[in-house]
Length: 601
Image 1: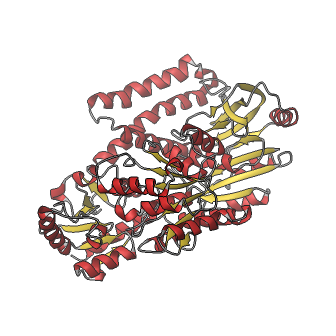
Image 2 (image 1 turned 180 degrees about the horizontal axis):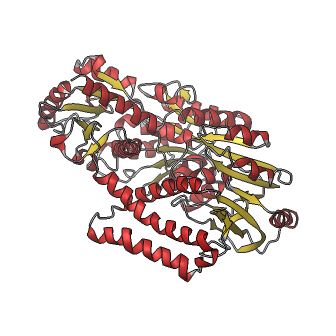
């Protein structure tokens, strides 16, 4: 069975030609559509394609991998919307499907590239070998770079025939892609924190453009392609110049007319490894991408000072100038609500009075949920109109994992075939002893519990002591596995996707990001219907009657008793629900708060 897969975004002008070249001889066409605003999806459906809608990501290889994962064929051909299969390559694909040669698991394909109305033959543009044909689960995209090749588990051969790549039928289309690629490269330079100095100005504006031009034009004989070869070499060199210029612009320019927002650095750095640190990072990244406000590193010139988290018992909030506005995000006040579990010393109580006073002075307070808004308003006597609810979103880098990744992560961590998953910290409000105890009451006694978090290590703190005691009392120690070194989004995605069920046993949350993360990765979710969890879980979560072990186990059993069809419906409902929470929406709502704060002046 042959599956042809695409990842597309606004491809109505070119997609039909590609689909026509494969429609008659393929068994399945899968199209992942990244928020197209034209008729791309309708065109794909008219050719019998199965269309899957998702967000449009800057690194479009993420959506390409999603399309690969959704394919059901044994032989997979991954195409771009601007690529056409010639007859010789079509015959080769059919031969692979028919005869299943075993010496290779994937194949390079020669590509002809159209530029300036000419098929390029030199300049490194032919044969332009790409891996696009492979057996199911034998190749994947690392999803780290827009120019990366497939990673293959096995031998790679060379196919006969060509892909005709209508990448740049005219200069207008070339410049659109030029803009996309240089923006992505600029973002990479920002991630790498490339210094902005005279040396790098020379490197990116003169040396790299010149070296690239001469490499393509002279070394790879681009001159053979005449004017088209010259322009391609010239423009390729310009990629470095423009990418670095965009990077410098994003780092240095402060456009007039935009609200200037200062986010205190220490408040971010101290929380990098915690949920609020990730929230801050994703929010700031999205605000920068949207470009509606200016994030400045100069506190004294900012219109707004925004503290992205608020600590009850540490003196974090500082006074702002009389002409500035103070915005504070409160994620939860759990230590205040449960004082017996979170004892505070004298200094903590002094700091609390100071922090509460500063919070009341804020122009606006942002809460992650209506539950947190209600708590802050009632407990600290703040006007509810002064508190705006802005929902968060899941880690944007998490997605349903491939079967290959799931198998690999289970092997790497020696996990059982069926397991319950928990991801997070060990704070008292997480109610982890009851989750451990629930193992005794689940019907499937071969199911293990996998708990992911850096704090799941023996330590002399009360939170760990109660976990350790419960392990002994429940006699399930051999069925509980702690993973403290999961550091990549890819592994975490695989852990979510491979779990039988994700359980958030908390008796209180300010939001509950793992609930959305699990849903995004295609894992059914069980949680209690308390605090913010009912807001985050919506109609897509399966709710336990209480946070007691017996009720958690009953909800887990309910998930395990679902038929394959029912389970898939729960997964799809969760994915659809999680997709309504995006960082773009979060950033837009924060921008609205900023605008209201400035207008209130």
